[in-house]
Length: 66
Image (cartoon, rainbow, N blue to C red; front, side, top):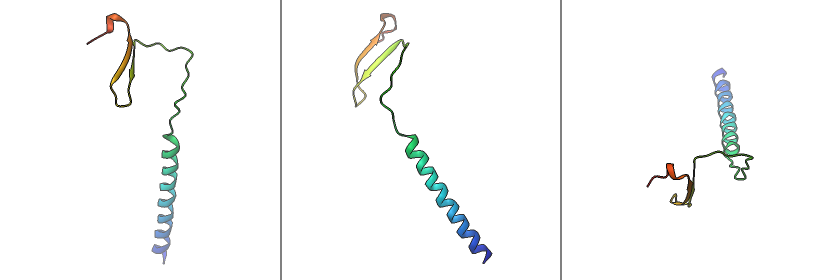
């Protein structure tokens, strides 16, 4: 009887930890796409399409590479 109680307790702990992990993963991966900056210092900005191809880039001439 003692082993059956321990197994039930362990099953409950596993279910609780899985539920907690699912909550953490789903709430932690939400992206906030409305980023605003007061100052942004960069040397190069790549503007890309959804498929990853570069549409436009902003850079200074000395760092431009073909």
